[in-house]
Image (tube, rainbow, N blue to C red; front, side, top):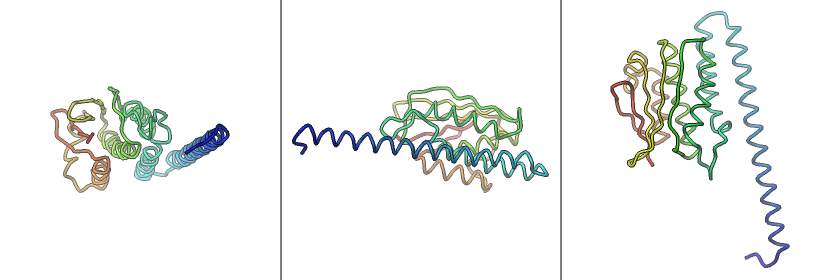
Length: 199
């Protein structure tokens, strides 16, 4: 129990210092991610062949997704606004692929999730964007807030998502593992897949 104003002032000062330290740590982590991405992009442009460029792009996409929580500023008690966070991530992921090979649109808002679940969704999204880039398609994401829980609707050309939920492709396996980590369930939809998120 705090007994007087001096103790309250001391506690408030310690809290401000702790918040400043956390802010600085987040800023440094974000800078580190951006430095790694810059190096990967330089190596991607300098790669001798398409296969090497594609492998470097896949690694860069995963690093970009890892930085999702760092760059998302819509925090509320450890939660992240899903729509704005995915919009920012999608813009970064599109830049990693050949110009015009993929486009991503995000619609919807009002859904927040714990930061670690949004990070897992971001990693899965990186794999889906890579799939669409390889097949030359567009990916549309719609964040929906529903009574039974939030949903992320993923629409893409059928070739881009064919077999996604069952293939042994390492990228697909990674994406499915990330979705499990995000406590999400995949459901086939006529124009893509629905990712149902536990509340």
